[in-house]
Image 1 (cartoon, protein in one colour):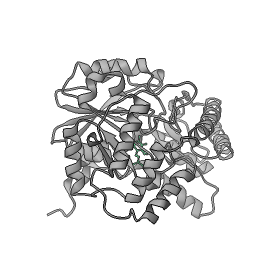
Image 2: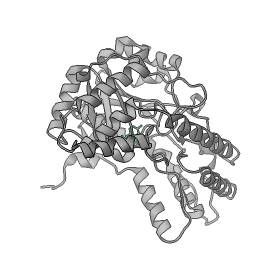
Image 3: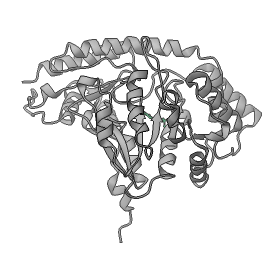
Length: 400
Ligand SMILES: Cc1ncc(COP(=O)(O)O)c(C=O)c1O
């Protein structure tokens, strides 16, 4: 009898973590590695949020909390959704989990039966298909294209929907492409979804606040109220508040779904860290003055990286609207040979070659379901980014 669960056979380890580990190993050998593979801001959590957490500890807010979150945070979430997204939710329609990933996991665990399909839009965040598999569902894929700046077109969404589709996961701005949908672009997708009333929408709005220029963020339930009853709007504080280690994510949706997620969470983690929840209340309700600072830095870095990559032989890189990733196409480099004589057959060969030759860690596109591409996270200093792009330019120039 096998010891490990069959479900594990369908789950792959995170490619991001694998590359990050390889980069760490090279660093330990003394190499000057520039890591552009991790998905977290290089900024520190703003002080007002840290102070709120310290005050919570001093007040003795250190006990179990209600499973779906402390009432103060659930109320703060309803205020945030009203203020920023024009969405009306009651506190009972919200739930707080241990990071956005956990919230997605619980939503799918609470709803998927064997055979249920979940559409992931490629390139997708690496965890979606794996979470779907762990929850016993089947991940299916809708493709995007470089010519559309990796934004899903309505025909592709329509094509991906089957009678077995239970959810479609939308993610704008996207990890890994940074692509974000304008009102009109998203409206075209919600029109498709209105024609398929059996499909639920899980919108991952984790990068909502990280958009640049005059881009205006929108979320599905806001622009199509007809979807309100079958949309789970998920968000968190990890990225925009530089709180990846605090592990707070949340979602709002129909009460029956939230109750089901509450049931799952109650037998799993219970409520998440009380201290982190108090910190998140301050993140949502408190001053947002750090945000323009983050955004300005990210926008400058995006422009630097996109410009340098587009001056690189064999790379094509659209300018994404948000997040802190770019996703250059490297199809022209496939089939070329590196100075060490190795041929580049895949985008994975390319990122491994780049790491070994130039000590720059990026993540190959095939792990996000669309390639040949690679993902660069520009959540690091301008100096490091400039040096990394110079190394990428040299690496690509030396291919034959
Ligand atoms: C698109 C997307 N959704 C969700 C998450 C998960 O966030 P958290 O750290 O809050 O679990 C991430 C983190 O990388 C992400 O990129």
